[in-house]
Each structure stands twice: as C-alpha cells, then as structure tokens.
Image 1 (cartoon, rainbow, N blue to C red):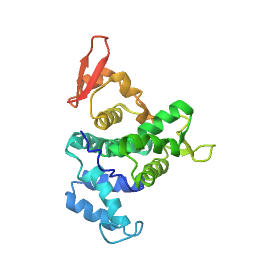
Image 2: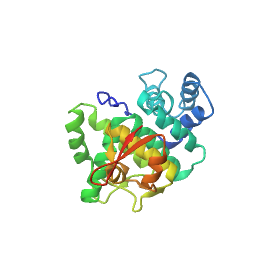
Image 3: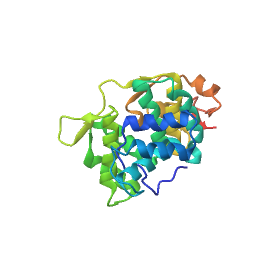
Image 4: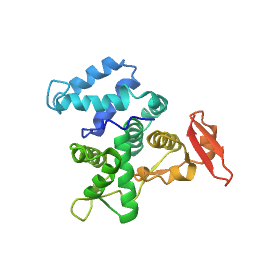
Length: 242
C-alpha cells in the first residue's frame, strides 16, 4: 500500500515537465542522469538552487512520478514506458495521470473527491474538496495549498476548467476516450491508489477517472499478466494487481 503519511505532490506540475522526465527514462538514463538533466531543464522556469527551493521541490515530485518510483508502482511504470513513446495528446496525458495517481496517494485522493463532487453536483468546489480531504489527511496547515497544486496541475493538463460559480471547477463536456493499453494503465493506477482490489464495474465507474472513458473489456484484463481476475458468486469480476 502506498504511504499516506506524506503529501508528496506539493508543486504544480506542467505536462511538458512530465514529458521530459518520461523521455529520459525511456531513453535509458540512470536515475542520477535523469535528475541531473531535469535539474538543468527546470533552471529557467522554477526558482532556486537548493533541494528546498521551488526547483528542488518540483524535481522531487517529478522524480517520484517517473524516475525513482515506489516499489509497488514499478510494474505500472514498466507498462507506462511501453506506451508513452507511441502515444500523443490526450492519450499521453492519460499515461501521465496514471503515473501520478499510482505514485502519489494525495493526487489520487484529490482526483477522487473532484470526481465524486462533479458526479453529484456537476462541479467541484474547492472548499468542499478541502473538507473531504481533511477527513483523510488531517487538518494540516499545508493542505489547502497542496490541494491547489493538484487542481492547477489538472487544469494545466486540460482535464479541469473553471466553472460558472466562483471557486468551482468542472470537467470536460466529453471525457477523453483512451485506448485499451492506456485503459489498463488507468486500472492499475486506481488499484494502487485504492490499495486493494475492486469489482471491475467499480473500477470503470471510479470517480477518480472522471476525465476519461475507458475502452476495456474484462477479457483483456483476464489475459494480462499484470492483473488477477476472479469471478465472484454474484457473477461480478473482482480485479487485483497480480
């Protein structure tokens, strides 16, 4: 299970930074070489020269997403690296989303609450998101600021936009339809974020996946070595990470 004691995702992350991090690992860079490249890459866009500066903190987030991922997420990264080179545009954002959700529980939980609120009310209010996050993560002094970093990241990636009401956010009018392979990455990320198996129907309808429409029959999960699928007594399919 991923660590829910540390927030981790505490910077606004731009899509092009994620592209740069993924490219270095795809090209075979070592972790040290990839970090060194990204440190220089961020020089003119994030301030500071120390680990505690804006640049240092941004590098830490990027490193955990694509470079030095938690042990539980190594299978996800391996699968994601196979897809990232052949995807573009919205499909590529879905791959990055999977890596963020699969490595940062805080990111996953914010996305889940945003999805639940949009499903209930048609929009998500920042105050409501903070209230729900406080129940899980506690009333930390940094909570509101770090929630904003996740929301701004999702907005920068084109997955959220300002709603008509002040302080509200809405998703796109039409979810992004992702292909089969990317859909499997999203399933893997949701199972990591939940820290347990789920019924297949629950995964497809999971609120964290609000930006996406998955194209994925259960037979493809059954055939995948990444998942274990068990048919339950009520004829539903229960999916776990293998």
